[in-house]
Length: 407
Image (cartoon, rainbow, N blue to C red):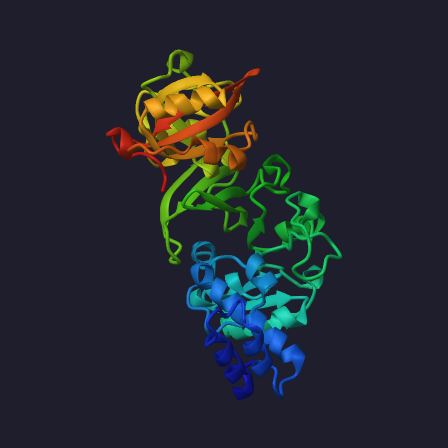
């Protein structure tokens, strides 16, 4: 694909009216005098490049396939991690990127200084070397020497034995390859370590978490990664950190919060007769890290639980960047016909439907709640004890209140 004939093939694909759905006639002309396997590779390469833009920036020069793109770290999170690891580097020390895949993290590490990738897949190793412009060693991570090194590791989270791009993601610790047994060795040997884990892992079971720092990393409100920082890379050992990156590919931190998991001090009376008060939805990184108490304390907010264990709070006012805020207009039993009548009375137009614990089938119920009025409403379908309830709310910008929420 890097030779002139490969580049010409890709250029012809980009000229199609719809490159991802070529017309039969376009495909027939493309295949004239070209090996079928090269056509298939070129089609997938161009599809991956087109889809990579929001994740990796300008991808016109990258070598990657769709499975590699799916598993690659976006440039924003990668640059955030690279900045922390660069602070651990001594002089011109090389940072190792184990299980580097197509090089999403390696590109960001190489921007900061000397870096070397390692991957057992020769194809991905070749892709990463081209994408990052640095050496990539074809080797299994299990046998690589990390003694005294600064290391980033991104274990695969597909089921063992699955074909490239065909497996099912597994968020359990044992579903990572390499797994926890090897992590323990790396924790002892590496001078500084960043271990990228699935955001849904059981945090209390992560080896070395008590001596390292667990960071829940999000872009906007989307939780992306759980990171174990260990050795010289652990900013505050024994803590958890919630980090929200600003939109874009720069990896700029919009907000960060560090502490130890604890239950928030709650004012139950605030959840009584909640109409007119504010429903607070914790940011996913804060909720996963168990730092809701720290987030409330940061803004001096008093809150009560809408229902025990549900994770939603009721407060007198919005509470800064770590909570989405919605003014509560009404709380009613979930009766679709009555709910539609109530929404008409509230002059509902576009209606967003949200739920927790799949209390309602949001995809099925959403269409029936849309109105023709002027107000944008958000309806939460929630199970409060044994009862299914509809909590009808307004966002701050529609309620005339102060700005709240986390992007």
